[in-house]
Length: 352
Image (cartoon, rainbow, N blue to C red; front, side, top):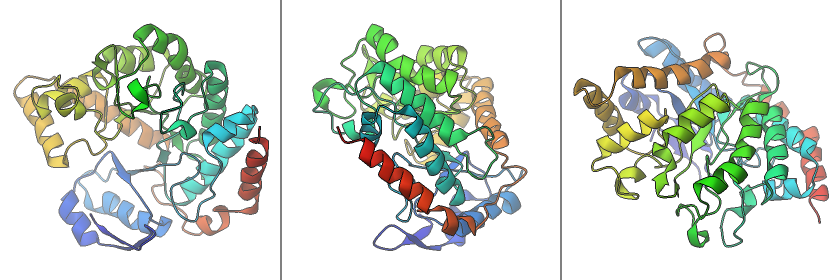
């Protein structure tokens, strides 16, 4: 809405007047920087620091399934190929390379890695997965996250990981994307959740992306046990939950559980979803939250908790101390010889 892009999706111009009209001097939890450079990211970040009431920096997020989603980044083999190597340490190498390239472009957090078990060959996103085996997937999930986050989230070669799709997403009815899970709750807990446990409890992944699907007729985006009791209470995830694209709005127009969009938002927030990903227009989301609190339908503490989780990650990433990105790093890091060698090595070892 505030950029001009060429035919390849590369941002050629940033319209800060349009950005100002959209933001109206407000900060936000996260901004997706599709096709932007570090210099362009810094322009947007400067708006947050200098033109919003509290000067809270933006968190920049982007897709990075097998490489940062930008044309000049290293393209690694898909995760199904990575897992075919049966060498989890390669996941750590790939994760670190992706993190270094992402952070060099101004990205602080990625919508990855994908940790869905895939057991239906009809499912159209099988290439994003580590495969069908719980143990193997867990090994790669942990190592990839450790590579991405490193030992210091403030470092110029580290990003916060946002594993997805939590949870039971990769085995939909009929192999149809977004359909209900064919797995019942027992199977999800015994087979799917250990993969995420390895990522969060052992790999210390920061955030999570909530999936669209339902499990035994209960949508994950309103499941307090999964999003709060298990994810935070048992696995110790420190950050926030972001809805996958429309996971909360589907409570209204797909699962038909919420009678209104406002009710869908309440169900999602109270269950443990902290950020939306294009579920509703921003004004609808914000006005609904305000009305829920003013009417007494939702406690202010629910909103405070969601804000606290997002702010915690901004502090952990060092954005308050160092909100800007070194604009010279990308040319040295993206598609550097070391990363291309890693991609080639994974490709060779993926052949089975």
